[in-house]
Amino acid sequence: MDSFPGCIQSHMKIGIIGAGHIGGTLTRKLRDLGHEVEVANSRGPESLKELANETGARPATVQQAVRDKDLIVVTIPEKNITDLPAGLFRDVPKQTVVVDTGNYYPRQRDGRIAGIEDGVAESRWMEQQIGHPVVKAFNNIYAQHLLESGKPRGAKDRIALPVSGDDPAAKAVVIRLVDELGFDGIDAGGLDDSWRQQPGTPVYSSDYDAAGVRRALGKARRERAPEWRAA
Image 1 (cartoon, rainbow, N blue to C red):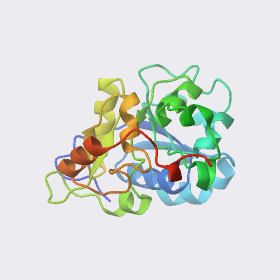
Image 2: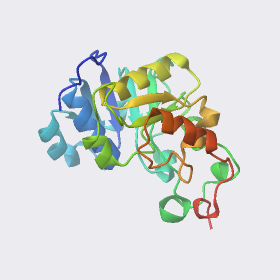
Image 3: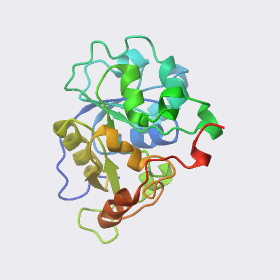
Image 4: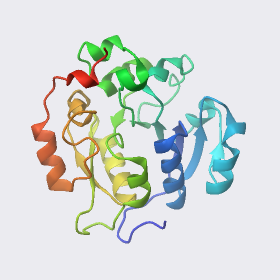
């Protein structure tokens, strides 16, 4: 899909770690927008040839995916964050925007992660593991909707997506990218507030418009419901 009229678009070098539902969708959409994309996964570049041939993205190792990038997306299961190579982000400049799309699914996939169970917001925990500031985005929308439901800016019922992070400049980059993709980006506060968009909250999997997202964020309760905690 081409970029929507009126979008602020600039060419970026983007690395994506993870080629599952969200990672594959972002690879397709960001390539359609003209960004330079390298995509990596745990199985290595050879496993990504089909996606690369389809999209024009370059298959890469995780080390290559973080090198000389304007923006890096980490979109892997929470339980696999600690399996990333040690020091992966050590030489990544602080101003490089890193987006975390992750969600903690303790019963369905991830098992118990002590820090998150103790109350640390998912993306703050992830930030602590990789040692680089992150912005949380794209975690509350189904991949199919991300692929197909974008609309031009100002369109009726345009879906809005919350964006949380501590660095206003980094958040602005992500909100602009969300807009390019066909959605309204909503500043959802600092990273410690990102629990407001995690699984089990009103905004999760909601497809609300901007006003609806703001209302849903305001209704969120910090305590995780039992089904979203480790058994």
